Image 1: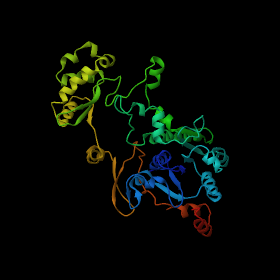
Image 2: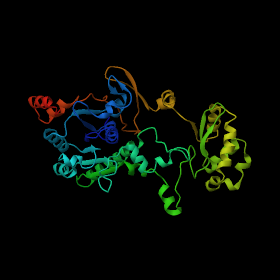
Image 3: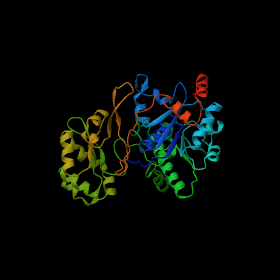
Image 4: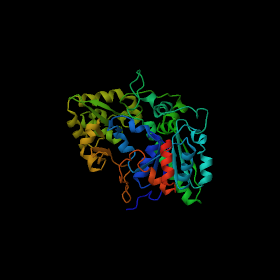
Length: 396
């Protein structure tokens, strides 16, 4: 079956998460992705988190469907290979600090001159312009500057980070959107590519919903609120009799009424002051107390069963063991069985989004370091003797 990005050639020059996650998504939907890695060490992600036989199991998820080519980008020979690959590519992905590629003679102007149809995704902490462009920036810094970290945690306590590098992944998703838009424009309007400038902090800020309009209109600075959802009620985590928590979102008008009837509070269901969200927000502590009183008298499973029967959005807080054993994840192919290079079984996340006619797929496992170097360079006409000389000098 033809995949939606079949025939699209991608050169991935990024490391860690923000650039490579974008490359992963493109590869899952059919793009041919060649990943450039430093000789000897490779992408630092190979050594992040928990390792198996010296390589991160994260690598198996992040780099599936890609080809690995080792190349010293600081060398003239390595830079020339990049130019040759860029000339044949539709997309180039990089997430170095702004100015790094220009220092190597591989900036947008140089590569666009070689290949006018090239689409170039550049992900960085603060973007390619502006007074902060030269600052180093990781996902956690983008999360803080974008406004997310200020809202995380409990009131009056140290703001906490989300347990993953969400700023990097959000930037990658915005990058993929940009790539698809640029490819569409190129193919519909005469073949010209363009540069996509994605900043980590802007990708986070784009998710901040009403944060800025509320500040500009009312001077309101939203504060962390723990498990609740400020300004939308009722929506919180409620402790059950077995010590577990139920997440209950009873904030729709009709949903709220059904919730109050379920917990035996017809008085609250019939109160006209609570019929809409603004009235409920003014009485949120009263509503949370009523719901918590009900959940405290029932186990989590009983609470969720009752809420589900009443068509009230609710759920439990999943850890990874819950995820791995959940039949719904399996039914929707969100847990895929795979093998590490030595044959060890491993489970990997499934593919999102799900397309009905041209779904994504995992066709090849994550490559070993430099697995495709000789093949790719041979296709460029670089002979064996030259490759051996380069290998001896550490260029590949």
